[in-house]
Image 1 (cartoon, helix red, strand yellow):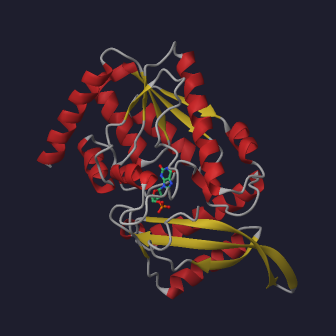
Image 2: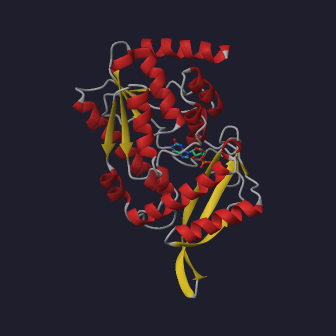
Image 3: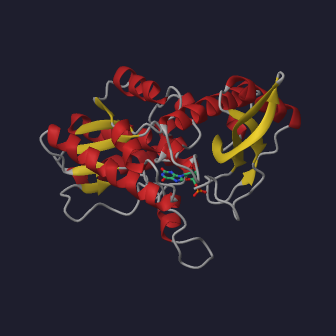
Length: 320
Ligand code: XMP
């Protein structure tokens, strides 16, 4: 549409003016925001841009491959793939406080970007897919007292000592506008329509317990089944975001003629237009039953599935 087309041209102009002949490094998460940021900047300044995909070990099943394929093969945009999972998992092992996890992950991201910037002979700018709601929500809660609800890892600026400046071309946009812009830039529908995924990834979906690779694997499997069933039911596009949460509680169950004592998980799905308010998604009970059965039968380590009926407010979308 013409408004987004005009927005795009304007944004490209601004990026060129801001960056000049400087070098930009852009963190890709596989999400819509960072993908649109990268493609937009690439249109503006071509190979002055280097994209970095940091696998922090908190990605969902198949995510890393999808990103690498889209950027390297489809777009031909140079992409550095960093496997930093040992560093990230090691750093938050044993940590259960949500804000500490978020801040640690945010700090490590910056460190990885700094290292990668060095490798390409220095970068003048760091690009991020910060949206308008990220900016507001990290500052205060609309209508309420001025408190931080969550530190979105991509908001809050860069450490003083850093020489890179921020490029944030989506800072004025809401999610639906970012999707329009993505379409305008020719990103495939399957990518533009993806549910949001938080920067700290699965690390904030294992609340109240030490995070281990085993638990990440268990959660990844449950999450993949859940999303597969949602897609098969034709409901993916009706939902803003859906994901599984691994609960820090084990419960007793019975399978065949044996006793089980395994973890419970919660399923979350919400509708929303901007992520700032949300309603729980009213699944047909039969579908929830089928998903629960599949998860319990197919995922070793989970023997009970619950559904989260909390809207936002008073809940947030993520559990941490
Ligand atoms: P909450 O949980 O605050 O989430 O209701 C609102 C939306 O933001 C996403 N989210 C994040 N996105 N970095 C991101 O890029 C983050 O640190 C982060 N935390 C939450 C969340 O998934 C939801 O779509």
